[in-house]
Image (cartoon, rainbow, N blue to C red; front, side, top):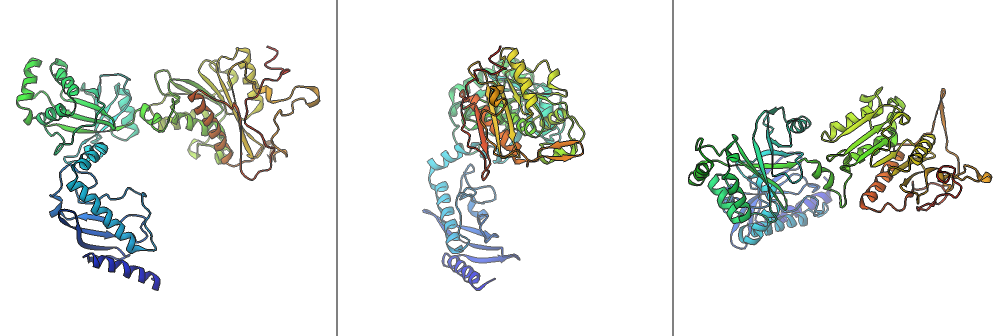
Length: 556
């Protein structure tokens, strides 16, 4: 340790001493534990201060002594069961590693302010618990049962409740197959065959903050009544029907403004009797019937694929992607995350006749474990492993033999192969433009990437990007490269070298256009995205008009 570092450490130790902290432990590597007081507005607290990272990548730990944690309510924000205080959100404040004394003072002051609010500001306490409802719902002891919200039909009022082996918790899903798929993907074990059901409710307000969350049926009824009278009445109506007692367990799932919470109990402790009598037993002996909390993790396609979007996702659409090579494989991974293959009618079709070869690996989404496999089939398997609830179809043969090419909502040409693009363009025109088509490709050695979106007769077709007059026949209408691309030859095979960044850029450009399409405005339909520091002709993004003498679209 340099003399300067020793001086900084001495200043930090002096600060702690002035605040009444004394060192009680030193560990190799520089970790130190101090004990001292935090002066709240009403009462002093004794805490341990653990500093194991003097670079302050991790904040020092402030831990309230066990004898003092009893002063705080059971349901409390920012103070866990071990007494550790969450006083700064991770990375919200950058502590100065070159001034450890000031950094430590910041931590102690903030921890004091947070603890003071928890202990003395009841509005802050209730509001923070409500805003972090899901965290407290999961962690308060006894800890909640893990629950997974899978595919549930929109507007459903109930759904099957499946129990996973290996202590995997419970899964809420439309059917056994969907639940088994989730269990397999999340390694939750197998699914027990049961007929339990969970009833679904929606409220627009956050629940009140009780001393602790309901632990029995009587506490549950009181809590629901205080929270939302309509919710309470809906639960009571359910308990007045035979359906509530037809299963071993009764599940209740409530969608709140911050997410789902659930409750589970056995309503049959009173034996078999009419629903009216069973309901009376629940009210009379409710304190004897244990309630377990369900801590839901929403893995439903609706949540997964829309959480990060401010616009409609691609669910419910039939999308055909032609080409599962460098561009197509990267784009398919983006499409599935944008919701392709989800919804009742959604499906993502992957078309490619080629097998994955070693020379493809340097710029393909797939790896060594897929060598020798058909690209479309292998890509489908990989996507299903990551998103098992999606619907994908592999078409392991040429697009020329695919009769379903245009029988959907969108066709994407990611081959980057101009003859294939010309063929698709011709077929599209001959079939009277049955659906929109998006073309994307890489120019040269990856200097730039381009895309064209075509829809109706007002749009330039793919062939309109080539001049038609005899003087400049088949020259690019919007030239961008100043030099022809470099080519490499291995045996009889010639290829254009470019790094994986090029297909990533092309896939990103295509995905951006699709996002604009989902928003309802895809203009500009012809786009170029160039790499920095490349010498190319400037090309504006625009909506190209059809060529007056285009041999493809003007002769039909």
